[in-house]
Length: 621
Image (cartoon, rainbow, N blue to C red; front, side, top):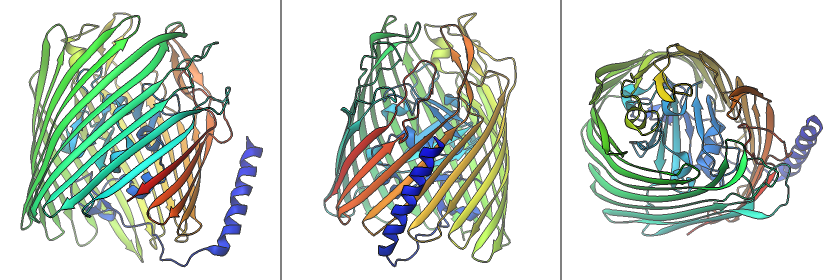
């Protein structure tokens, strides 16, 4: 492994040196004083934010073409997505800051998305296609004040693409590649992704329509002697219409349909099986904004239906829907005082022997003060009014202090925040292990850290976090029922990030996470995790990057013996290359994942991907 890394590094440096002869004279693409939104819902300079927000912009998404949403997010600090390195279509486990999947909230275009028919009310990230995503912001820590229930360890805020400001514009992508394990390197073409999107603006009207499809096979879900292929496919259609009669008023409606199919095997006994999971999501919503002077009124609303069927030794169906409405007023005064006052309504419904539902009606307020002498305060509260559990108050207090240092700043930050997670409908009323006597889970998070930026080319930050969970809901295999944990779960750790851009053409990013969870088995949560990326623009038309990812040891459960297993650490190297065949019109790209063909285990008994190649073409018209 070390020899391979040295050879790879030497090749990259040689390539860098040869291409430096044609390095362009250009303005530096600086490590910018970014604008962040998620921690306040206002567009604030990063210097004034009391959180270390992770922002993945359009350019970065384009340089990860062909990768899934889970693969892209998994490379960020503080987050581990188990299953993202395995066969396409495997169930994904999202762990942030030592927490579990239902403690992470997914937001798309300002609206919370969760599947009320799932066991833990999580959203299935397999339903998301990167083709229609414009940007991703990740805020870690308790954020229930602004975003409500489930926002205990992280909020993943996804914005879809806006229509083009031209009369008509097209965006078409196609890629194909291998899909193979490290032990079966047959190099068959077995992974295909295609998307098409048309959008435009006609005076006061905007429109967009997009379609994407993915298909893969050639890998077995579970490692068995026969290793028969298990297929995965997903199709997604998106439509949006907007009306913008003036700068003060905008309105749009949208709809999405996504269909997913994935084959899988028998995990009890680890045997090949002809099992299949089908899922369909139908979603319709609207966004509107009316502005006046220093304020604006906003309404985000969506209705989503989920219909899934499981074909296995224990077949079952899952049907559910939810209605989300978020009405809020924003006010900004002289770039010093920002306030938001809102009312959020959620109704989750699913079908068991009969329809069951519950509602959440949450008034909330949040304020930001940016002083002229460096002090910034972000604070607020929310009253959760639950139809089953009554009232519960959550809050946050997030001060920070910035010191100007020449062309940069040194920022100190801290926060104390609480969050609240109610049991899911399945845990309360489902047909398997339901327990109507469950209590809600409560969380509190303490953070402290600093961030340094210098000369618009360098930024580094480090944050210590300390979390505590009470009444955590889990499935007790002895009683075959969902119960509240009697032990208090404690998690702590450190997250560090670096971004360095010594020239306009060369950039290095890195992040490291240390996580420690006590109170249970902490399965699939690595104690140490490191990601690095070095990217270089050789010319205006040519870009390449080298990535390195280290995942440390962690525990997992062998569900055949229900014994604890320690999984070995592993390192993965990847390469990305793109070339504009026609500037700003046609781009050819190549992705190589797990370049050194590392053999590793992500989840006990399940397959992982070895060395794989993906070639693609993007055309903009």
